[in-house]
Length: 119
Image (cartoon, rainbow, N blue to C red; front, side, top):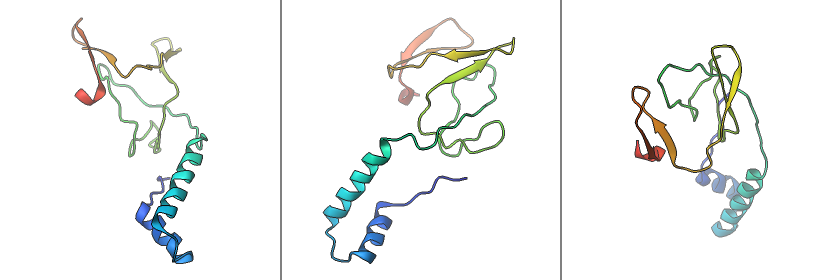
């Protein structure tokens, strides 16, 4: 199931079909109010399993990403990540609040603080 996409231009066009004299600024305010209301609720909590790859640090979870069953992830926020260890036990990965992420090269003992956009 794909995420439904619609542009602001399309929304304005649809509103104008019903209310042809509605000012554009009023329509934008309605759209903004609707977005605030939508953002107040968790609309689609899902769980997903992905296979990991040795020494791989980053995985695609945004638009177009798929889980192990080839289902679209459609994730817009990640609340929790667990990894299965060699004993088939799940270990919860601590959530990173700070946008600086500690990275370690899998082949060395060196580490560096960088942000994801520096990659």
